[in-house]
Image (cartoon, rainbow, N blue to C red; front, top):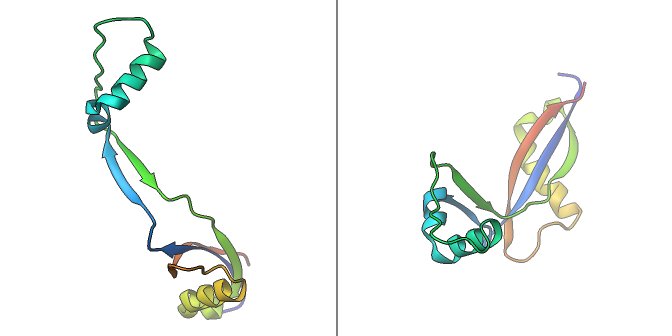
Length: 108
């Protein structure tokens, strides 16, 4: 197989956060409800917060995405190649050890 691919990856660390909180949980929190009322209903009384749907808020560690290119022939070894790229550029820090592949794009 001829051609190249562009691979995006991030570094995974032990202190990464990935939490989902429902909007209902947020609105039940007294401090958050007070802050919303203070910002959007300043000076008004007897205000109740509610929502029609129950969407979720995702709290995640903001990750930097790194990119490198590889041959299509190396598809089976992409994870190892991403680890080598991270080590070569000294991107793996203390308490960070894993690589997560984010995207793979065919260039030509």
